[in-house]
Amino acid sequence: MIRRLYRSLTTTAATLALATALAGPVTAQGVPTVDTQNIAQEIRQLQLLASTGLRISEALSLSCDDLTEDGLMIRKGKFGKSRLVPLHASTRAVMERYLDQRRIVRDAGHDLFVLGHGHAPTATRAHVVFVRIVRKLGYRNPTGPGPRLHDLRHTFAVRSLETCGNDLRSVLRHMRALSTYLGHVDIANTYWYLEATPVLLQMIAATAEQTWIGGVA
Image (tube, rainbow, N blue to C red):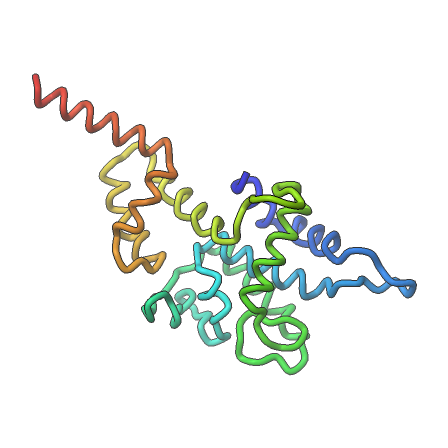
């Protein structure tokens, strides 16, 4: 489910359709009851979370100066850690389009992600908008549990590990790099994602079984 949601958040056409749908009904003058521009900006923010695995607190703390030629400079990570997050070319292209839109915001401050008032949204608003989106897309019922905003980070990590294929050594090397990329203090926190990757778990189990059989033989 979360993977289908990921795909729904990563195309320009989907972004425009979502922004229009989430704007809701219009007034008698034809004006949307919700600021479509704000919603579009927040969807761009969700796209960044989906494509980088950032924590929502990290994304909302970004300033314009943090977007560099080398990637995103995370200065307010968990436990005060800072790190550089490289950006894929497609993600950078989305960010460049976002910056073009950002320039029309009056009195915009230093925050990278801003709404109409010129400042970053609150974490609470980000969570609320995410829930509205997943409900609009049919991935969450009006009441009850469903995909969470933090699941975008989990999905990024799992998809990243799956690109290693069936090469166990590659998985272990990638795990160390992924731990740094995600800003984990302890690599043990990164190993948790193996539990959410059935394909990799099966490979590790098969390798362990072969090793054990080989030792017995």
